[in-house]
Image (cartoon, rainbow, N blue to C red; front, side, top):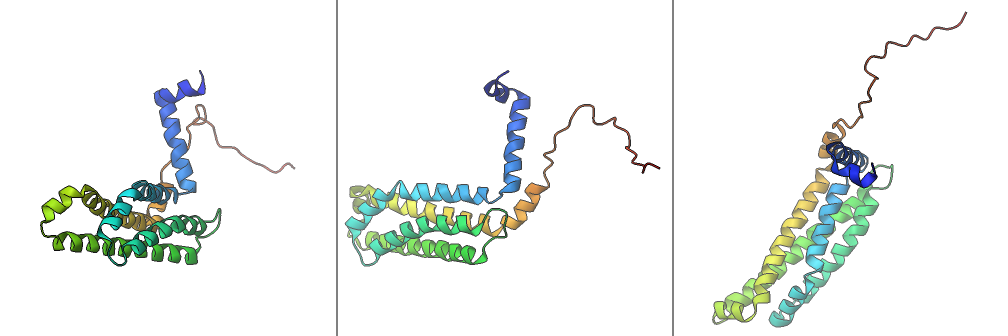
Amino acid sequence: MSNKESKNTPSGIKEFIRKKIVSLKRKPQTIPLIVLVITFLDYSLRLRIISDTTAKINTTGMGLCGFVTMLFSILSFVCFLNSFPHRKKPNVLMLTIFFIMQATIVVCDRIYIGKILQAVNSAPDAGKYINANPFIQSAYNLLNAHVVLVIITVLLVATLPLYSKLIRKINTSIEVAGNTDMGQIEINAEE
């Protein structure tokens, strides 16, 4: 049976899951890294919406907030990856910088959301303003979702020691047939 066919069988699926759990035991920081990647991709792939909103509303600080958010999103990867060196203790300085960057991203997003609300509320007819510029509502939704994803990422990094202990408790050993009836091995010194 080939490797591809064995993955489709129930034992092949179990083995695949077991291997993934073993890799998570070795590197539990993979979980927050995946969420960090999703957060970055969600924001960066829809950056055009932010750019259109900045061009339309064009108030002081909007461009700077978008720039800082994008810059710190990229630099967060560097800090996160340097926070967990291979087979060493976590780098506390890099983790601290990572948390500061994430807090700055949330603050910039909240400022940008405030600028959007200020522009919409100062428009003579807010409904027509939003209907004429649907990307503004999309930017508002995107930034709120981005804040939530950043907070989830920070919580996953902060609670990493807790759930990594739980992951390590999962039994991933393989039962080998015939090993259960082995007797006790006696080791005697030869005289």
